[in-house]
Image 1 (cartoon, rainbow, N blue to C red):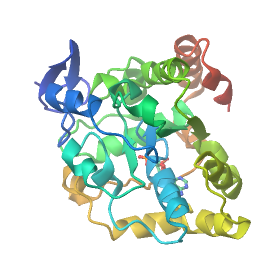
Image 2: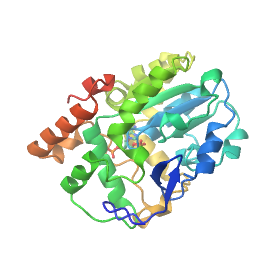
Image 3: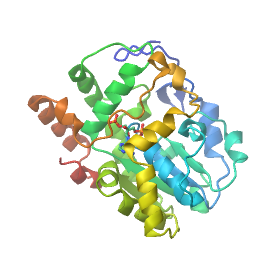
Image 4: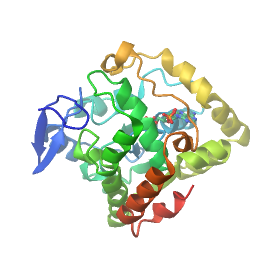
Length: 294
Ligand code: A3P
């Protein structure tokens, strides 16, 4: 079945009564999601959860360096540790601490997450910058309809431009806050792309504290430098990425520009006002809404 807005031709699966557009290569079967629910968790697990294009690759690499205590890039691509691309058995045999990441909503996490007190890091970013980043990401994908940014933005606001209902950003954020309230025993920390960009070493230190680590200031500064945009972009190019071939010329562009406010180069004033109104309405009562006022 073809998604009317993206032109992505993909299988649609119904999981526990919800309709999913299966992402290419992802295992969004009912069986997989049920297996995830029963996945064995460990007390030192770290889960990085984010809507796509929020800065997941970046934080994942930072957390890897923090836990290893070394300024060395993880040799594997992030996709090798994503819940949506790997069977549960793959995670069962991984050494601790596991730095798992996902774009799935947290309701799909293992029911042991609470009792094991796995730590959850949730990355957030200005939705307008996410929309721009996602636009280029999708335009680079094979088999995608070519469209203008403003066409894409209209669809993004309706939650229809993205494959998979879990990829509706404006449903994603309220649900993340709700999940957090319903799971008070799970250590949870929000981390904003914009804060990472403005003062990386401080945010890295704050993340370390949340993880129960005490790195020196100089290690935090070194990690910030090693994980700056250009350095990570170069490091990432040499990695084997299992999803590379899904993109035109096998070039995904996970690291495109890495800026705050690139939306200003893409939104007209009218589109921006419309987008702000949609965000304000959908994020009513959400703590994160006040952060997105730039
Ligand atoms: P842009 O498309 O705006 O450049 P994710 O990893 O969740 O898919 O997010 C990708 C976005 O994070 C991309 O945004 C990418 O450039 C940006 N990014 C990755 N590493 C970064 C870094 N070290 N500094 C700034 N932005 C970074």
